[in-house]
Image 1: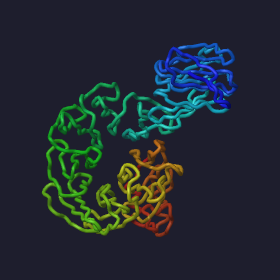
Image 2 (image 1 turned 90 degrees about the vertical axis):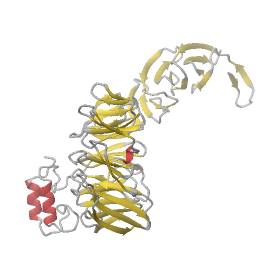
Image 3 (image 1 turned 90 degrees about the horizontal axis):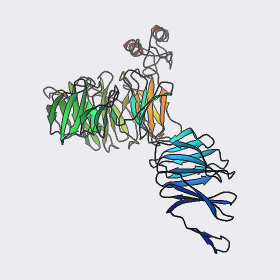
Image 4 (image 1 turned 180 degrees about the horizontal axis):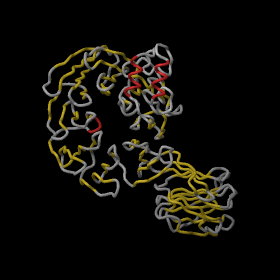
Length: 497
């Protein structure tokens, strides 16, 4: 290691270390030089006479080090995942903390109070130097795993483990598993197979891909090059077949009895391929008795509605969609009475019984994240990403998409990429492009007075406002409080209570 005079560019001295150097730092007052080695060595030179002290600071590379502004401490980080603080000049260890990830980068604030560590997977954390207490997790590769069925517990993966938060946002559990969780969070598909969350027991080995039904009763997995279906209560294999499925595009009927994949309809319990279609997208209604076949024939969209059992054509229609580039999602809503379709810059609401176009609205031409329409649990409202505000959703009644009610769920600068509703429909979990996670309150359909309970008070207020254009009681956004709004209160009576 050579030291040079920066004014004259003359070599001042050469220092020989018994290890390969990987990191260096001068103290702010110029009195000391710290050197880190590939084997975790830390050597501190006093530049007045080049006397030194040395310790074994880390297991593996000492990737970065820095003095505090008062010249009294050195902060070091390493591939072993530790951050440590050392006294100057004795190199006595003053504190250490495991970060949970290999740390290639470090910055100490100018006032010497905080140290910032950067992880290999994009993590950034802030630590208080005096105590090495974790002050704040600035970034994580969060992946939303949704709410646990029947609760408002939030499950998210940070890239190393899965964290569970209660409805107040307090961390209540950390689970050393991550992957694709069942909606009830009893099971998870990991790189090592399907695992029971409660005790880590592997139920199916050699499985790393799959998808659970909405009620968690079934799971489809890929094993030995084939697709197999299992019941999760007994882990009995129901069937195995050479189907070709892309799991992120698999859609189940709401009752879990049927699923679609690669433009075909299958029976979940038997794996039987009921019928295949020449289509760009296939969607099932709630009980799987009807199937919508969507074809993009630009500048038009062609839709056929057929009965699943015998393939009887119920209706067919074409709709103008000049910006259509791809069919992103199609889903039945409003208890199966409407078919919603997202393509290009449009979302269409279509009467599922007749094929009549009910309404339409604008949407992003290209999805910013996971391309899907989010329905509230009662299926009467849909959340659509805003077409030009990337941090915003719009919440709309499914039969009147033009009735804008904006729901901003992330601060400006955060681009929404995914979301999930709690079962009671009162909370929305949102993931953004920078891996931030937000939970926001969402009003219940029929909850006129906003107390999170659809009850007599909401019924009375709707009746009192009947015939008026009261915004609060106008649940469907058609500018008049009428029978439709009264029915929504009745349909959702007791929700959230």
